[in-house]
Length: 277
Image 1 (spheres, one colour):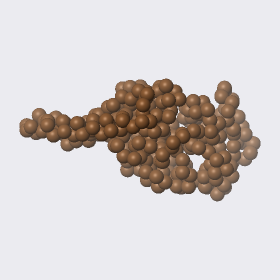
Image 2 (cartoon, one colour; image 1 turned 135 degrees about the horizontal axis):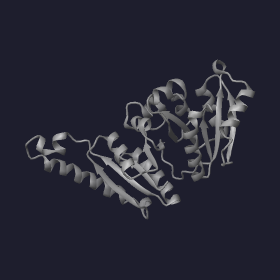
Image 3 (cartoon, one colour; image 1 turned 90 degrees about the horizontal axis):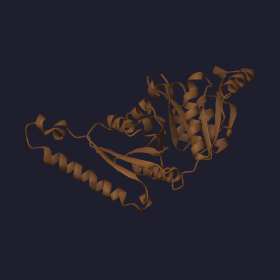
Image 4 (tube, helix red, strand yellow; image 1 turned 90 degrees about the vertical axis):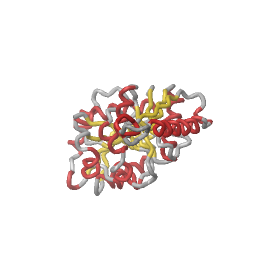
C-alpha cells in the first residue's frame, strides 16, 4: 500500500476519503496522489479546435483548481504526508484509470454520499465505473472516520475458484490493517447447500492459505442480503468486502448477490476487489 490514489472534487465526501488515505499513509509510509479532473469543453482544452483565444479561460480553471488544492493541502492533518497534486483535463473515469496505472497505485479511495444504499453510491457515477473496471482494490468511504481502524472484516463469498483472487487480495488488505477476516456463505432456502458440501468447499478454498487470522462461517437466512446484514451486525464488523465483475459490473452484484439493502442497513466502508475475467 505504497501509492494511494484519491480522486477529489473538493467536496466533503472527497475529504472524508482523503482523511482515511492520510491515516493509511501514516501507517504504511505511503504516498498519496490527489487527483482532480477538470472536465472542460474540448475547445478550452485545445484552443486550436475553436480558432479563438480560449487558452486564458482554461488557464483560469486550472488556476482555480490549484487554489483549491492549496486550501486542502494547508489542512493540519496533511502535515508530513507526501502528496502529489495532479490536475488533468480528461473525463473523470478515464483520468482515474490512467493515473492509477501511470503511478502504479495499490489502492483507490473514493468518497460517496452518506447512507443511501449501494445503488445510489455506485450507479450513475464515476465510482461505479471505477469499481467495475479497476484492477486494484477500491475503498469507498461514506462518512468521516477520525480513527479508521478495522478489526473485523467481512468477506461474503460462494467459495468458488473465481473468488480465489479477490479473496487473496482481501487477505492482503486484512494483513495490512491487522484485521481478522470472516468468510461467510449465506445459505438460503432457494440455494440451500448441505453442511457436508459447504465444509468440503470451504476446506478446499483455504487449504493453501498461510494467513491464520480468519474464520469460516455459514449463515442461514431468508435472503443473501438479509443474511449479510445480520451477519455483519452479529460480528460488529468495521468493513465489508465485495467482489465485482468487470463485464457485468454492479448489475450482477445488485441483482444476484449484495443488494443496496446491505449498505442501507450497515453504515460502514466497502472495499471492492475485481473478479478475473
